[in-house]
Length: 147
Image (cartoon, rainbow, N blue to C red; front, side):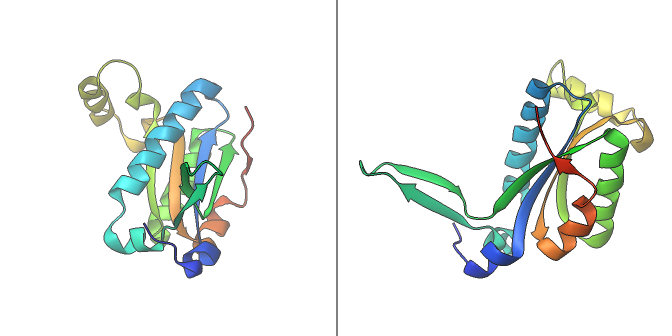
């Protein structure tokens, strides 16, 4: 658990969700991506992530990210595909979620995804972590997500 003040001011989390996906499914995709993003981060990236414990008067601890975590919306999966490619090309750490990752078991989802070309994938979401100056150019065209 890092509490680096440098990270608090220079890094952020961003999640982009497709407006075409119904809110419950979008939130499910968001949760999967957030879990995967933090779990797959290497030690260097994890050292840039900052988490803090809020304590209430009863002494209960409520852990949360000290960094911005912004959820944005894209018009469609093609916008997310483009943002994903920009993130990859600029070295921004990212994970995505596609329609093929839904329904059935994860084994069937993996088999279904393996049969699709990138241009055939219906991107539902993209989660990214990195320096603000790298993320801002990728995400500036998106607006805040609303259910």
